[in-house]
Image (tube, rainbow, N blue to C red; front, side, top):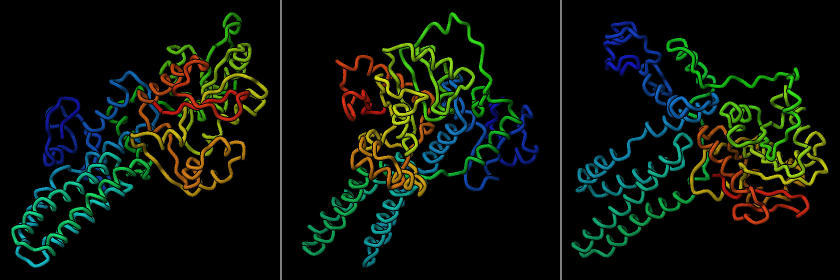
Length: 419
């Protein structure tokens, strides 16, 4: 493992002999992968993950975003793409003269890859690779098997080869079409990430771009009267304080000339003042950004029906997402989770919200599936919200990516693609 301080490569025996320190510069290694059970993390791996998620130390991120980021990296790293091919060819050749040897070998490989395409411990990229491996096996069986059957002039052998070859091709093609809708589970819990972060910062100092829990400060801040006379044309409302804090920390409000609040009232110190400023603008547009779960799906409804927000107002509310419609339509896989609690909450959604969802969307939610915004990196999340705002600046004429939901008078729109 290379030392992140001086770049010296230290073998296990060197690290052990030097009490977990670098032989050259004596810098302490934060992690020893050989002592880890469920995951294997090295110092260079962790350092690169932090550099990548912060876009080279330019963006703030939440601990849970790092959890998703590390989880995805570990899944991709743990699966070799082509090492199976040599073993597959060798076993088929080795068992060729046995009566059913090649048949057993191919069935075993097909079952292994099929199981991996459904594994909750693999990410979508790796699951797709396993689906393609099924197609490759089917192609090999057809090419070699048909040639042998023609050489032996055996129709029964030809029939078996065609069936056995088409089966993995069919299974692989089917799995490629549904992998984006399969659920995943974390490789390690959030509590373990806290231990990793504590250890890393103990050895290497504080991570400057990691955000703490949002500060629920209730004391009103003093705002200059000249500032309160101004208003915003746009408001971004998040369903969680963590996402609102993330956008604010990364100066999204300055760069996009908008106010940012959470439905929970974050930031509390300026919430009331900001709302007073916003209500003075009759041309205000409100952008809802939320998780794709029953609570998040209800964000727009709360904005429209809560007196603390925009009850009896004719302002336009644009749902940027994340919605089941966007997940179902996307060609890129997302980190989809599932829980009985989410399924129950979906079944208890108010009728007004249910009417705004399609049958397919309701079925998706009621199956217990959900996606969190923190599964996206800061860079991608910022770009998606920027694109959602930019694509809806002129609702009346540029509605190519907007879908009007409900009555025209409600002025509620849904962005049809999440980025």
